[in-house]
Image 1 (spheres, rainbow, N blue to C red):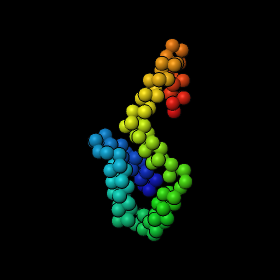
Image 2 (image 1 turned 60 degrees about the vertical axis):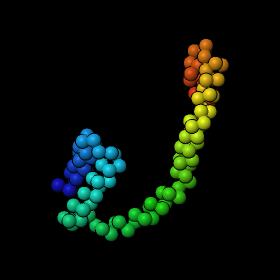
Image 3 (image 1 turned 120 degrees about the horizontal axis):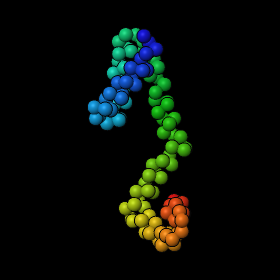
Image 4 (image 1 turned 90 degrees about the vertical axis):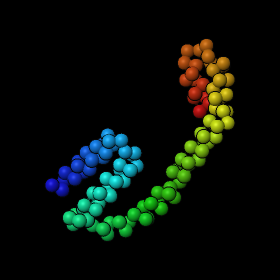
Length: 110
């Protein structure tokens, strides 16, 4: 029966998502329910939770992941200042008549 728990968890997540709950609440809620159930039936060892803080802080100090919020911030700033839109309009005037002009514009603007 223990080998079917991941399949049951997957089915519960899919069901909760189909009911219309947000993804974050669906994943977190399913994990909490199954963790409490595992603790209740003695399947889940609570000592495993001791590694959680070091994994969380290790993920936050990952150099690659630090760039993600900055990249999103740059995209929001380009959108709000309408700079990206103006760049695409200017590039469309340059490459508009060519075949694949939109692709060239998007690649050059970024």
